[in-house]
Length: 137
Image (cartoon, rainbow, N blue to C red):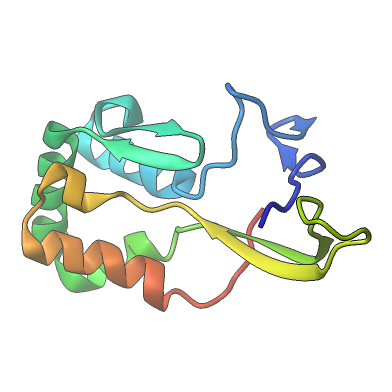
């Protein structure tokens, strides 16, 4: 299923490009960057909506999460952004007009790739699975 995102505002323009994409972790990244004194690019890179964390980035994030504890991690996780499409026609199907759908987009760190410690993975999963639906795009 393909749902178009051509008309979503991204920064000061409409629509995504290879260099200008939605980033559901922008506010989390800004907070981590300030707290760790490192640019977000030292923690992860965004590619096609995926946050690809470096091993050292996951280690820094993990140490910080241990330092701030569960309530601090919950506050940090409250900064996760999501995007919601409602009433959007699917344009990739054999029938026209296509079905109308709703879809939710969010970003997450693929922690298995970085082999982060189990408590950090648990906290990051909690952010994605338990955040209330608050569209912020």
